[in-house]
Image (cartoon, rainbow, N blue to C red; front, top):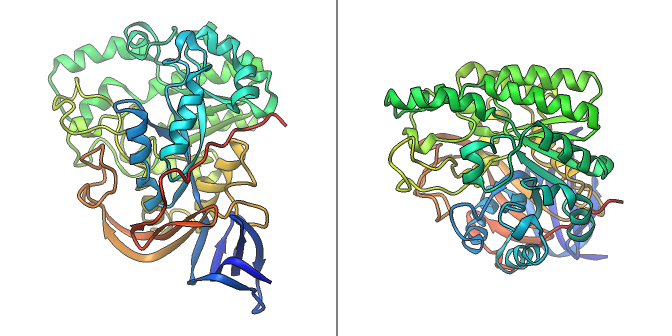
Length: 459
């Protein structure tokens, strides 16, 4: 037997174990895991030299088309491949930008632009931004393969005008959750939890005080307003029986509510991001460049998030990548929120998590690969190295050291990184998508157009 590719001498990581062996790949799929010396011949042999080999990272939280064109952003997202990501879960303004909230006609454009320009695979998250979005949940799932839908709980008042959606009050949440619940366990309501009504009462005075640093931004949007909206969303999920996914959870009190919901048996899960785990309002970042929503918090919150990852309260970690530039607005209060992070998701988690003893390699694969594939229903196609799965594979060098700097990052639509100067130990040295090596030793070999949109099904 001769296969297309053999990755030999690999420490193959799953959430349960690390297996020493060899991976046989044929026609873009894993066809065998060999744990003895009798591995097959191959047209190409890659020696992993007994380094850790993990499934391609699935980033559950990517924004594109926000401040730049979709085509530009998709081309720029090849940066994520350098960091070991092979599949993104992308928000593309679905719902808010479509005529009257319908995806008809615009979805095809988004899919085709992706498949023309991308070196990564992707799913799309839908936006729950209008009454039309609520009405079309089943249609969008059946026709376009979109089964996860995001609610911006901040979409009220002036924010609603900026976002371009309907007011996301409790009635809107209730109707939206009920609609998504029609999809059963395949459906997912995703919530950005921050109570904008309270923020609207706090922010003007903080802004008037003239602060321009991260502490001022954190004061204007305190952590407890996240908890307030977590309570609201959990309460509505309880009565509608709608699966609920919180994005970028960052505040310890919110974790307590989510943990209790899990104990009660509710289908409620949480994601966080590396920036909330290692950066905080005391970090050496200029205010406008650290302006994200929700804000960076404090050291106690950093520690609580690592604990929540290990005890299972937080099951997913994503980048919340959104391309902004330092010249968009030098003033904290006028600057657009968001920061780049797709390229550094895995390296930061390897260095700050695995190499510092905060998590194991198995836990890393759980929160960056397997859990993300399962929650978005692309498992076992993605998120695992086993016969039948896509050969999305990353070889990791836990000893490789580097310093993160905007000057060495591979994105072009942002000119900074919030991790500037951070010394990293642990880096992906090879990234493979469906059996094709797309990055090796820091060099891109994947061709734009190799990436595919992955529709999800209700089966």
